[in-house]
Amino acid sequence: MIALNLALIALVPLYGITGFASTSLGLRTGYEMYIAVAIYGLNLGSVQSYSRTLFASLVPPGRQSEMFALYELSDKGSSWLGPLVVAVIAQSSGVLRYGFIYVLFMLLVPIAMLYFVDVQGGREQAMHYDGGWYSGNLKAAAGGEAGVKVRPAPGLGAEAWGIAAAGTAGASTIPAMK
Image (cartoon, rainbow, N blue to C red; front, side):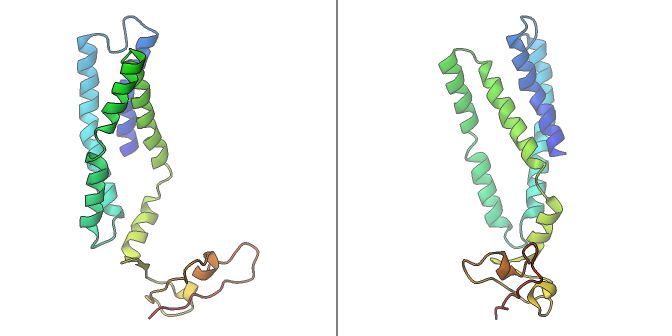
């Protein structure tokens, strides 16, 4: 749903870019601006609420405060960057419309990135995350009882996690931590 709202917001700079090819369209009149603001405003609140909800579902239980502090720092703390980039583009080119290309790019990149987010897998990992250690039912991987906390020795790769490499007969076991 976030991607849909971002795509609808992306219509605004896309329409603004049409002003390069047209003298009558592309955010040149007041009524066009009202329509653009309505599209933007009706979708921005949804993007913000969906983003926070998605983020909350991916945060490990008990770590909400520190994760949302980081979320707010990266969200509000960088809110000055976009207007600065658009101002630099407009100042250096003399045409504000070039800023629409940057805004469109900054809306399309997250849409593409959201395609690769495994929400269900992230939720499962968050539920099993325990203060820097993954715990849960690792019986098959560790060769031990369910719920045993395991962690590989530093510097070891997939073999330490009990993951069999392609073409090997079996997986190594993970030493249980006490």
